[in-house]
Length: 208
Image 1: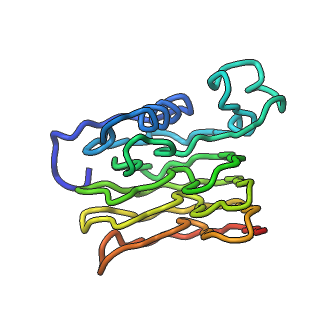
Image 2: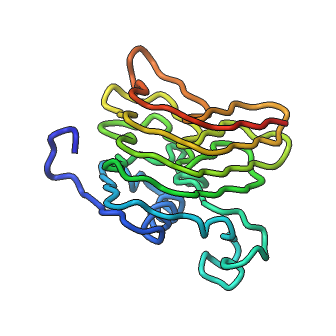
């Protein structure tokens, strides 16, 4: 890790099912479960099958292998948490990528691979990570805070990292208003806190 603390809990992530476990665990958590945890990606992950994922019935029913159903796709990490902070862990891609991640959702706020990091403390953040072939479509009339990697990155501390991160793909917001960005939809930080460094987006953005 980057903070020198060897007592941190580290989860190794090498498959789409393990990524799904993170987002389901964070979204169902009633506390800051991800805080102080490190998630280390150890291989490229092909997320092409998220094109057909449906929220109804979980992500392993027959409809998830075909275009049948609503095809909501990836559930952003931290979306729907009962606490308001979203994801507070430290995601280290270790220079690996997620390929062909799909989102097609009719929801209002904070859409991306990670939904939001709201006032995360300590050594939270995202580093050495990229998404290639991302395809996000957000439906509805009032969608806001849409980004390729993170929907909302709000009030990070001085220890929060966002470094060597990229997104390549397509983002469509069918709303007629709202914030959209290639990396982050809405970014708010104090002086030199949570700075985005050494990162880029190569993205086609379409708006209502």
